Length: 398
Image (cartoon, rainbow, N blue to C red):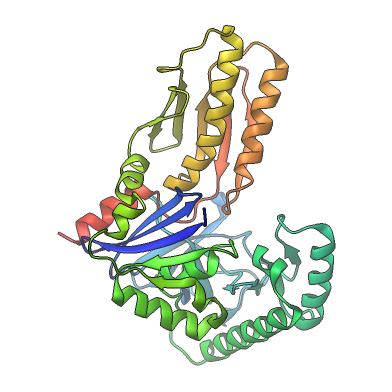
């Protein structure tokens, strides 16, 4: 079964569903006029330095301070600098929003500007040339040499997974475009006033067309307006991907019914997740972390108890990795698996969970199992969790 990215308009919201083998692995919700700050570049003004936490607060508009870690970048791009060797209150600097506001936390900024393409991410503050861990060693070495020569040591770069299937010509073309964009923004910023927005990403749901790695992915919508926007975006940025886009036109069977999207969304917002074995997960986000509990539920087996627990835990590990991505859960995640007696079974569980987390395009790290048999995971914070996205979108449509 081919993988799909379905993008629909539902009750004034735009919903995106990434389906692998007919099952959702990622769902996002946006208001139709979503004004996400993520990725935008501003001329910010340093409001204050807080040395005891190694941070600064930088305003990107008057009265809107954001968090900035002083260790973020060794060479910020200042548009106005006071006579002080380090960052100081009153300095004006180019900054990019790298994390949206999360609950009580303000947005986080970086002075290491990133310009993201389909194959490369150009970086201004970090001159290192890195590559996706999903690329093999030979491909990494070849592409690093290609990109290093193209950039000439001026900037750094991260080579994305998509680059593995691209030609050298496509990669060099994109490198040239990203360099031109970056240089243009830095030059223009010299003549712009504080709080100017220097760069804005396309609507987040449009960016998914660029950021989804599956080369065989088919993109489908049943909304002519969204189809026209996606068609124009791809025509302008990645015309080679236009054949992957289609408009679904069947009034008798809506796209959401065809792909069971209502059920997928309902299950992604439910606290309880049933497993095929009859066992289930309970997923409970809190202010500080997310807690996931594994329960035997309706599971029945005549096998030995420890073998039963092993089977349930291995099934749960695969599903937990999917649920983190599906719900966009981030930060600290604590999983209470069913206790197992042997070190061999525990090692098998950790190996399965680690392998499942590697499939997540957002960095998810398996930390360890504590003496109380609780498993610790961290996942990078980028966007709001799905539940929070839905709540915000519903408020905006009232």
